[in-house]
Amino acid sequence: GKGPYDPQNIFARILRGEIPCKTVFENEWVLAFYDIAPKAPVHVLIIPRNPYVSFMDFSTAPAEEIAGVMQAAGEIARTLGLEENGYRIITNAGTDSGQEVPHFHLHLLGGKALPAFPL
Ligand code: 5GP
Image 1 (cartoon, rainbow, N blue to C red):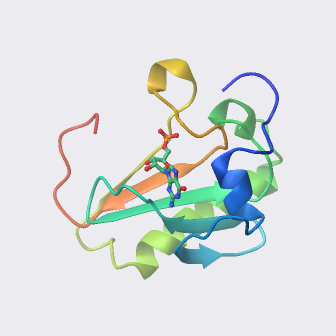
Image 2: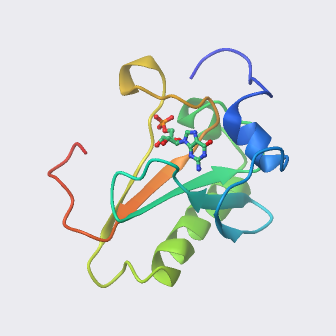
């Protein structure tokens, strides 16, 4: 979560089109795609197009951008039909969370009754 943004991280490469992904949704603020190792029947990653290492710095982004990302997450969940049975959104930030990819992302999880928090 700390330190400079690494432009060679895997999500930066996905954003540049250097690595393929299964796109679910995209707009001016975000790219959303299926997680390569899904932890639930529906597991989508929602990432801002701009370079934030984690929620630690995304949380200081312009309010318009924060709104854009959160509204996209809601729209994706709705479009995937998750509103009927519900879903979970989580983000890992920094070492103690086990964050692996140093580009801020929301995990959208659903499609089954999820384990009691924390997943
Ligand atoms: P974190 O631990 O950073 O919160 O989550 C990173 C997520 O990215 C993991 O769930 C992992 O499966 C996923 N992931 C890692 N590399 C790739 C990749 O190349 N493509 C996709 N679609 N997902 C990835």
